[in-house]
Amino acid sequence: MDLKLTRPICFFDLETTGTNIAKDRIVEIAILKVHPNGTSESKTWLVNPGMKIPDEVIAIHGISNEKVANEPTFKELSKEIYAMIKDSDLGGYNSDRFDIPLLVEEMLRADIDFDMKNTVAIDVQTIFHKMEKRTLGAAYKFYCGKELIDAHSAEADTLATYEVLKCQLDRYPELENNVKKLAEFSTHRRFADFAGFLGYDEDGIEIFSFGKHKGKKVLDVLEKEPGYFGWILNADFPLYTKKVLTQVKLQSKFPT
Image (cartoon, rainbow, N blue to C red; front, side, top):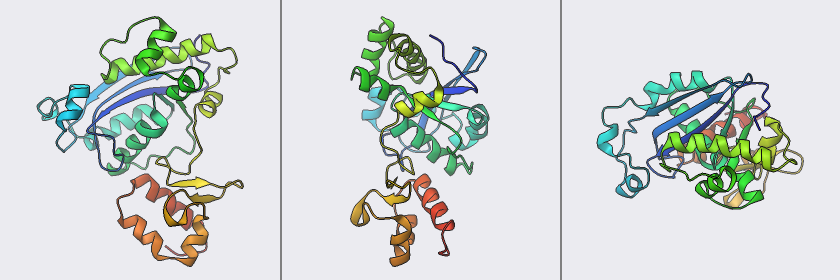
């Protein structure tokens, strides 16, 4: 079953130097852009991360330091990548908790003010886990009846993710073929940022989701303890978390 689209959706996958959203970098990105008329385009980039790729990570995706040594940095590629995805919704496998947060970090480091306010995202892994609870390779075999060749290749994983989603729509008639509804279904707990440091209470007010102020309203904390804002900005938190926190503060009566 093909997706019913009102605007393009970009399925993408990252290979990285590690799993720390704030510190690690992209070494490969593949994007498959599907248009409402059914046409698609794809592009894969190798990226020089500007840091050493650990041996244990190379063993997983096979991208060595030598392979990316002469490739462009993400900042050099950022405008081209942003141009491809800026008008689109997003889709991926474990994308809500890893790929999207890390991509946003890279965009912000490249001075591109990337924002998800008008974008919805489908996480195919979440749909799979809610329905079957398996891995991407198992999902591909289960839904598509094929073995996933070249797993941990960004291009292969991206194409497999798109195929799995289409097969999920065929298999589960209760899944509405609507990008917004699929995004809602594939979303875990709703956070104000991607990394989960800022959440919402029952009234939709931003709260802290960690540390000594967990569960407290952001603005209440910043009013009573102004230094907490500066501590977060200077600490090792993701750039997008800092951006959202700053936006919340700017919307309040408290000066930055």
